[in-house]
Length: 419
Image (cartoon, rainbow, N blue to C red; front, side):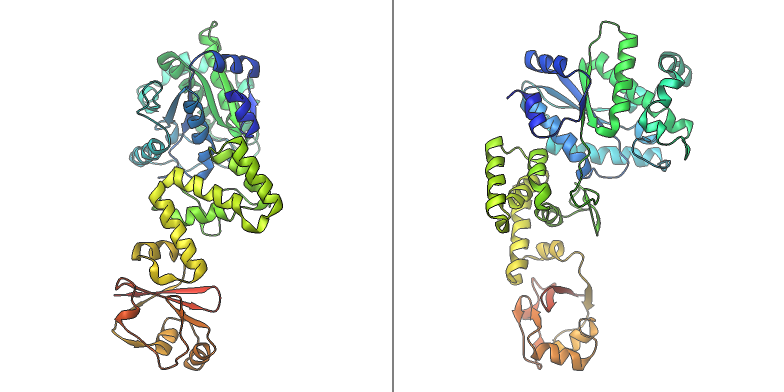
C-alpha cells in the first residue's frame, strides 16, 4: 500500500486538506514536511510520540522531515486544547528546554540519512528578529478577526477568556509554515487533531502570499484510552520520554499494562511492525488473551525505539525479577528503577535483627506483629522467605552493599537503603 493508505490503515489520519492531491504528491516526489514541538516542559512525553513516529514513517518512505522546535512559540503558549492561559516561562528556561527536546528528537529521527536526512529547526530564528510593525503588516493583515474567531482553539476560550498573546498564536504558527515553505520547500505540515485550525491558518497565509503555491495539512487523531482515562497519565504522573523523569522500567510497564481494547490500536500507532505481524498478534489476542503477547510486543517495540536495546533488556530483567521474586539478581541501578516509588527507609547502623528493622521501617506496626509476620511466612528478604524470628540482617543481605528489598505479603515492597 502507498504511504497515505498505510497511515489510514494504522488510524493515523484524522483530517487532510486535500487527500487526493496529497496522495498524488507523495507518490510522485520526495516531499519536505514538518511538525512543531513547543518546549512547554524540559521533556517531550508520549502524547508527542504519535506525531514524532509519523514523521519517521514519512522519512522511511523517502520523504524529508523537519522537526521544528518552538523556541519562539514556546514563549507565547498555544491555546489549542487548553481551558485557561498557559504560564509564561522565561526565555532562558525555554532555551534550555528547547535544547533538551532537540536531543530527544535526534534519537527518533535519522539526521544522517544520505538522501533524506531529517532537519532540526527553531522558529526563534525567524520570529525572534521580527519587529511588531513588520509582523502586523506582513502577517496580521492577512487574517480577519472573523476568520480567527471561527477557529476551535479560540472558540473554546471565548467564554472563559483568551489574551491577545494566545489569540495571536495561530498567526505565529502560520508564519512558521510560510517560512519553511519559502526556505525549505516544505509543502506539508502534520500535527495533532487540535492543531487543525493552526495548520489551515498556515495554508491560508501561504495561499495569500503566493497564489501559485500548493501546500497540504494532515492531522493525527488524539490518542485515547478505552476506559475513558487520559492517555499518557498514570497514578504517578505523566509518562515522559526523558529516562531521568520516567525510567525505562516505568516506561515499559506503562505499555505492558495496556488494556486489551487498546493494544492493537497502539501497535498500529506506535510500532513499525508490519500489517501481517500486527494481524497475527490480534489473532493471538482473541485466542489466548492471558498470554498478553500483543502487550509484550508493544512494550518491547516502543521501549526499544525510545530508550534503546540495552534499556529494554534492563526493563525486562526488572519485570521478570519482580514477577519471579528473584530480586537478588538485580543490580543496584535496576533496583533504583524498579523500586523508585515504593516506601524506603535509611538504616545507618550495621547488622540489625529483622524484627527490629520491620518495626523501624514501618513495615510492621509493632514487634508482636513483626514476629507474627515472620512466623506466618509473610516476610521476604531479597525475594527469599524468612521465617526465623531471630534472623539478623547482615552485610550479606545488602545487594551491592546498598539495598535490601523487603516484601510483606504478596505485593507490598519496601526498600532499605544503607547510609
